[in-house]
Length: 109
Image 1 (tube, rainbow, N blue to C red):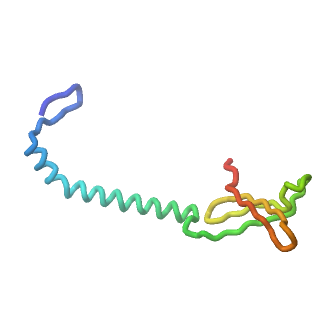
Image 2 (cartoon, rainbow, N blue to C red):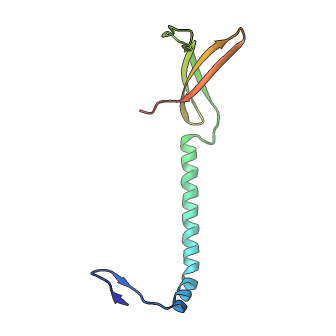
Image 3 (cartoon, rainbow, N blue to C red):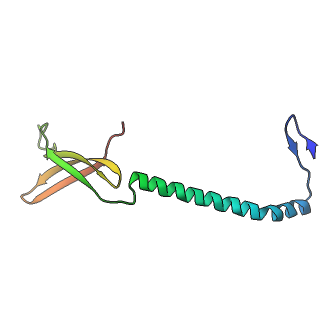
């Protein structure tokens, strides 16, 4: 072992020693990788449950647009929550029996 600056050290090993070190350390590395994998999976699972991504249902509430001044403005506006995410919606009556709805992510505050 040799000093390489204050507080830093390095090891000089030949290729046979390096190969043996890798073989010796590989079970520990595999175990650490497995633990990390399990931790990451648990974090993703908790985050998906928190945000509602595993519940793809939801609802939107629409009400008459009091600010409609042009034909291009939506007839109905509203908001709601779907799959754990907030959305805003606009709807236009199209013909006698049709409704066109546009859903966009809510603006973040």
